[in-house]
Length: 316
Image (cartoon, rainbow, N blue to C red; front, side, top):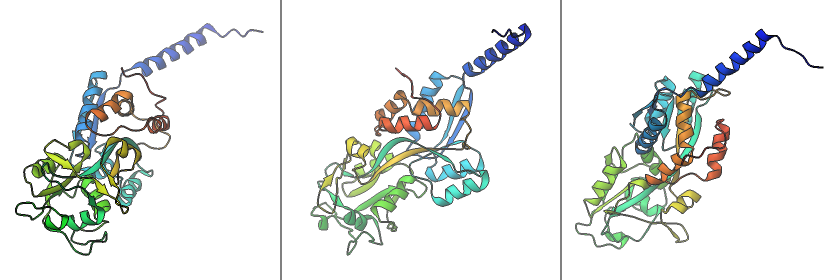
């Protein structure tokens, strides 16, 4: 038995289907406001440029003032996307959730590492965590009996042998991670020269044979040396990409985007297009091009499914 639908109903259903298809095919448009990590500024810029080529109607407004600036911007609603080189603190999450009633959505986008750098002519073979803490901190929480202020106790004869310290400013996620991991949560020495970006740290170390600093992996240049870290058993681990991806390098870290996305909601078109790109083959290729470490494929797939982005696409 066949049911014959009225012609008027058929036309109505066809019109509804065509309207939905038109909406689905409509290209994303608008401005995507992002506030956060300086470490990720280059990544966000390149992803934004690629997005603009693929979707000319979408613009990315980037403010790279440090990871600490992302949570307040997300909570205030001045940004829907917050790049961070560290996880949000409990207090930052609580402030967001107190306003919106749900937690921010976390998306891993790349891997990175903090690298200890010295002048290219500095022959320092490796450092233990306690030695690193003794060099940079005034608290010695990692087990050193005393601070290290000159190169001679490390077996080096450096002209005018006082160690000159360089690092990041307090609003950066890099500063916070180094304090937690390398200083065992202790306090930096007041004589550490603070810089607004890792590139400035590397430039300062490259200009002074007495200097030592820490920076993001992607800022390494031929003017500095990355110092391998030594574990309790005396094994050295250099910050090579494979070790960073596996998590074997002690100061490896995830780079993240935090999103203001309520449970059950879909990403707005501009934000969806951006995250779709970041978690695509093309987006992860940009990660590698800029000296970071791309995510393992299973991590990308899991996150795409969780965000309703499907299994990916061929980005050519």
